[in-house]
Length: 411
Figure (spheres, rainbow, N blue to C red):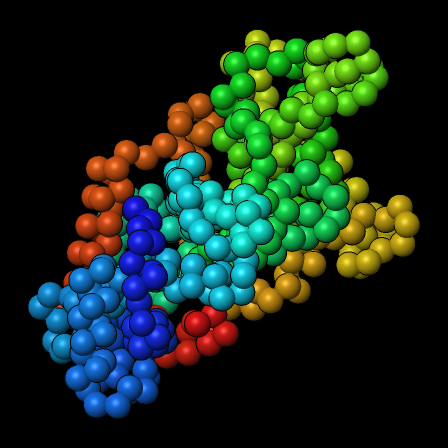
């Protein structure tokens, strides 16, 4: 989906109020009745609200569903994008939006700038673009569950990624620094690095392999399993350091050395080491790195590990269950992220979604397929499929999200 922010500067305060009203009404209605929009927006007379919602529809921020039983509108991903960007702008977290630098399976990545001119990365979660293919034949998934709202799931995905990213950054893990989170978007530090899959060769594959395996074990020691630890989600950053020593780099001059630093990204699918399927995800992460190094760098390790049982013993060491253990005790970051605002219902909804889509969504990565690249035609087709689902829901008079399902603090 394209992100066009040119119209943001022309939206009046009344337009923002109406757009927010549509979002608030979406908590109880898949298609928000026009009178309710006017009521929530608090605009005098129905004419003003009708004019604003008509302007928003022309910009693609809201959409009028065909053949609905009543006159109303639904919020589009474009409208949700505008609301999130407007919130970042008001909080001074972001000032301008630049080029798109990446398209993930279920996200779009843009370069943005803060008011100070500092470059940041804006990750917009768009669940449903690929996931819809996995579940589109099972229409009950969308029809009978509140978790069928892709926008709601996108909010959950962004909230989870931000909480995990913050916990890892605060505890010294090599991840981008989180800056802000709003709705389905996450702002983070811009890292000048290349994805591992684009690195044709490395001076010392054994060193880099050991670093990545150590990172998997360190995550597990602190109670987390990435769940999608592969060449698509690892960035390699080149850093200059003085003197010799390790680092897997080559000398660029007398007394200088280039150090290759792996940076880990993409955390919505991370699970606790106590998860029912944690062992499977742990071994899959290990297997992805092992197979990639054998295929790309012709490197095969003699060490059969790491092993999940070793990770369990480290994570469940004496005093490790406390969020702030004594010196030498592993800090359980999975417990810390659970206490960061994720309610039990959010966790339950997210688990339902991941159970439906996780296995199929990652099959291609293990085989080395570039699933992170989507052609525009494919994206447009998925958006059309989502629109068809919205029309079907409206025709049947059913609301995907029931009253009170989405926490009011997220609006």
